[in-house]
Length: 49
Length: 517
Image 1 (spheres, each protein chain N blue to C red):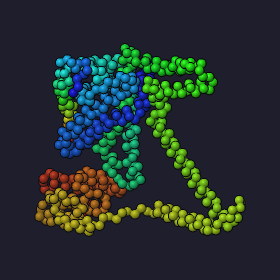
Image 2 (image 1 turned 120 degrees about the horizontal axis):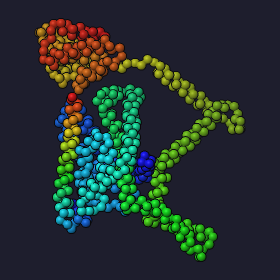
Image 3 (image 1 turned 45 degrees about the horizontal axis):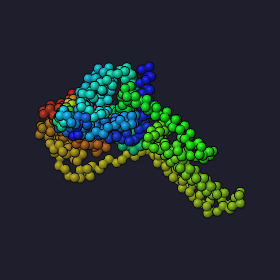
Image 4 (image 1 turned 120 degrees about the vertical axis):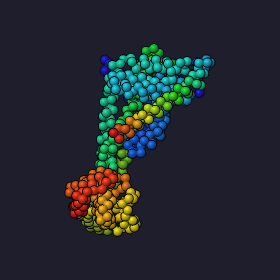
């Protein structure tokens, strides 16, 4: 990942680009998966109910 | 004031979207179509009896498609913004854009249901996440924090204006969905009328109805969402313009052409005169207007006059004209040919002699045409013959052994007489549960052989009953069939034997079914 230009020199920028962004992204992905799984569960229950 | 401004913004955003043309829309649909398909797949699979086993896979597909959608929505938003403010687009590495958008847009999945439930918060929440799709606009130290700040400001400023615009778009979305729904309702009916084939779609049963509603909703979203996104982008543009004055630059850039033309006109008046001056001026204007600095002149013209739809309409118009001309030519040729033929052996008025062979040809053609038309009329008014029922011998020709316990046998694989014989055998042995099943299979086999039911291992009794009820004059047989089914279900699925009076009722209903069907 390329850090934002102005922040490239700073340690925070590197930390953001290399660690924080991927970790948050992966978390968000799992969160989205969880939401879609819940929607599916709800659909299944509403069908059987 | 707010209402007018919202409608103006909506109109302007639609013009911008039209001007942007197919590239931007394709970019948008590249992201949204896979998500729509994944969502419909989730809905479809949830309706299946084994849907629970597919849920993990489908929800993962939806998530991947959602990330893909977020990325492409962001790219489309940036492209639209770059159209409004050329030079504002900063290239961002795709992983950074994808990750940022995944983080931003996933929050939407949690927040939007609550916002939609509260209704009043919905326009602001939607505008908030749509503005976030523009991020990251500039490289900066705290992209997430600053992005939230900018999006919050953009979403909450002029709240009432936003509400009016979103309500208008929501109303248009409903109308679009209804249009799609009507088309989806009409198409299977037309298909059935034209081809005679009935499908699950044309039966319009409950699950199909739900599917149609889902498809209409998704289609409406696919059509309207780019417009709402453009509206939000335009709104952000005007809000930013208060501080960076880009809207003024946009207006000034248009006005700049006047002094430029004056300058070109006055630049070299002493060297050339008259027509030479005019030609030189025209060439200079052409050259300058083709330079990249004044590229905005061309898109502005093409946006309003020569969009993708205008080009398409022009091509269609040209095509129609060609066909029209050709038909006219053929018609004229045919009319001339008829005129020559109808004169027969008489001398022509203009002095050209008609050929007798030609007249004979025409007479024969007319006779053949008359025969064909009469044949078609007779065929049309002849009573429609029913397709012969499938030959029971050929159906049973596969020599499948009758076995009431084998649930993989299609009832029509065995003759109904054979099922009845088995039923009576079981009754003689006092095995009423097996006898009930044999009666049930005999009924199905009989109705299948009469062409009243199309048998399938996947169909339920409820489906069979509805199928039989749709047959003309089937009320008595339908009642008997339902009686047999209820007794069979009680015995077979209830794991119990039937009483003597129930057996009598079953036998009577089975006889009645054969009598009426």
